[in-house]
Length: 373
Image 1: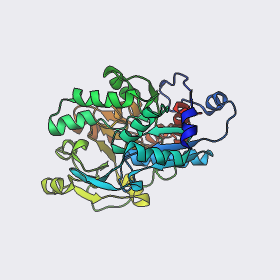
Image 2: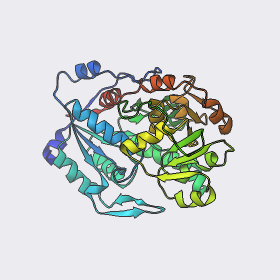
Image 3: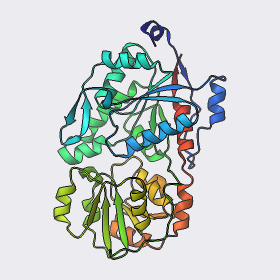
Image 4: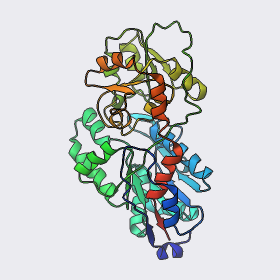
């Protein structure tokens, strides 16, 4: 897309309300295709500061989205830190921050020639893409993935209201901000965010599935956590619990060494992928999710797909995925929740997970896009 073309573009906006009704299958393809008046497949530029080799819910969501959109015949070009010179993020050296400018990222977007631009994160790449699109009067969308205000307030004592104001400024420039759950939508609306649209998540039901509990020397019941071993996951709230059996932590991160020293009885097995990860879900009796700051929690869906019930606090993510469905126990008494979850039917967990597919997620994403014409 050359500069002269960029000057002539005009946004085509698709918005059918797109509110949650309790089912993840909102935003159907027929509506989207009709509104596009028979146009062909889309070429999408997705700008994200979160990308491989990071392992987190944002990266996994984007990889699954890309795969599903390409299966549907669309093109997805990722603009990531891998395309730029980077420096390590303070306190998170494994996260690389891109060094770029609006002009540089503008040239990258022009070379992609996209039909739609989606900005995923509020980091250096997201800020540069936002500035470029604003300067060229290009319509773009964003998405909200991480409750940075709560995390920053807990770690550094900076008032959450200050950070929410910064994030509100960032997302206010977008034509639509996509959120994963109704509870996050409500929270952001209360903080003054607008143009919020639903974009749920999915799970690979073939990869994650119930299986016979394998033999193990670890005492049962086995209480499992999967995710980054970092302060925002609130793992001490799980590891401090007086529970029978064995606590297993799958994942890596900056807090792992500290927590291994503090909790020598817990089993820290590091980052796992593929069949090895699926095997740990199969091993578990209950999935314990102590985080209070996640906006969704893909690992919750993976556990449910594996027939493993959830124990969690009644906060965003668990409230939306578990709620009153009977596939988990939500309580401020996390120990009581973990013990009560032992009696939940694995088949009910699997059935709940089957309501969430990457196909529906991709259709919602498409429905929320604002196209460049």
